[in-house]
Image 1 (tube, one colour):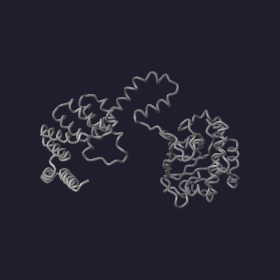
Image 2 (cartoon, helix red, strand yellow):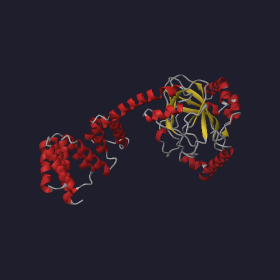
Image 3 (cartoon, one colour):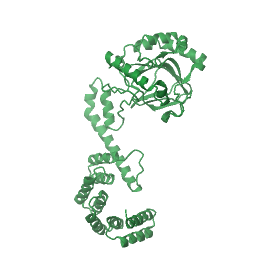
Image 4 (tube, one colour):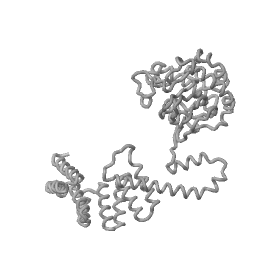
Length: 431
């Protein structure tokens, strides 16, 4: 950029700031200074044209902007401004052509999409407007700071999209009502429809280590995949009695579940790291029995030995009583591999205890187990005034064959051997 170009841009930026601050006289003087320096520069002509449009001089504005376009046809913003002039002049076809010219240069240009959506809405085509507005909103990065001039248009876009989704939901409910009523199982379809309507997200497995492709991406797995759940639930009272004894008598054996060393990026774990707010009483840890703890819980240990645990030498299973203190929150996170699934057996539920996997949130019910894929983002809350306790252990994903399990087991061991347990632990990857 030449010194002259830099000075010109500086004048125009100062003029824009003065105009935004309501100092019209100062803004106009700075624009006049820019016109004296470079009267035919596209940026100068553009600003002069928009000032004329703001003053109600649409014909003059159009002339200035056409002069700018004669010198720069590659600026989508110039075309959007031309479209704005045609809108004020009531020239709908010319407005459309100018907007299409802007989008031909940049199909995701937010001001053009917003103006195109507004044009369709003015024409009474609310559904087409909503689709255009939805495309416009997709171009805005999360957390982006928008120019003040665009905020009212973005708000209008959000409102239009939301209103259209409500109308679409009513329309689909009427169209599908009889068919849904006659369908024996609509859960999967309902989830997809809710995602289409913007009411729920579709979450996908995001393992921190091994991702086995082509396994079902299920948040909670169907109970029929695990016929041994009934055996587990039948023993819930006995398991709870053993937990209550160790909770009362073995507080020294409860460990912080999150226990990363210094220097590991904690991200969401900063609050819970080395904290007893989420503690564990381990029966198996990294595939090894914690014999002293198992001796304290013989019935629970015997029960677990009879179940198809996820077994990987030196790595799995893990089985433990999980205690979440009153008011504690386990933040969103995902597990290491979808080759295993996680089983929860609720033992002590003081109330107001929730658990989310993906887009599905459930409340625990005492003695009622469930199985979920922990590589799908999940989190937990204990909003009660007392600790909440559950038995947690891992089991093989039932969609894996025996040979696949053997390969995964050996690969997991080899991965740990390659890096070494100390190195993995130092990088927060020992789970």
